[in-house]
Image (cartoon, rainbow, N blue to C red):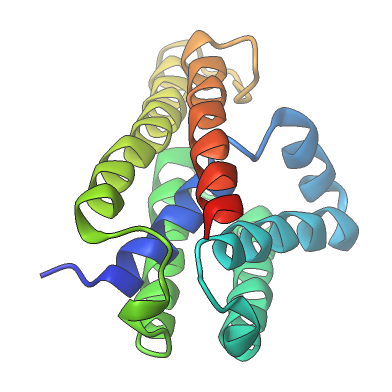
Length: 179
């Protein structure tokens, strides 16, 4: 069964990696270490908001940020022929790190009770699935046109994925203020 700590860390990842990774953040991330660090800090910040006592988890949160930054750096520098493969490998590595780090987080230190937690987890997968669909569509388009197609906000699916994050941010802020 999916544990509360793992679900919480996964929600933090899904929010930070999809709706909060706007085109501007992505472009800055591609430009070098400062952008990668900003993206990793967003991950750490969102995840910290999901924990009742985030300072108790400074070590795991630091490891989460550093490993996320390094994983993204590798993804940006080891180009795959198909962006879909790179996307999937990147996400598997991130989820593996989250799984390992969830063992250091107490299930009692998450801000959402299980029924709410798993409803939010289900909702947070929507932007990830829309983004994955957009990346896959770009690969399929490239297969037929033999041209490089970059993921951009002009694509309706990616814009929708980013917009779906705003209700999540409101829910997080309300929960954080109410704890």
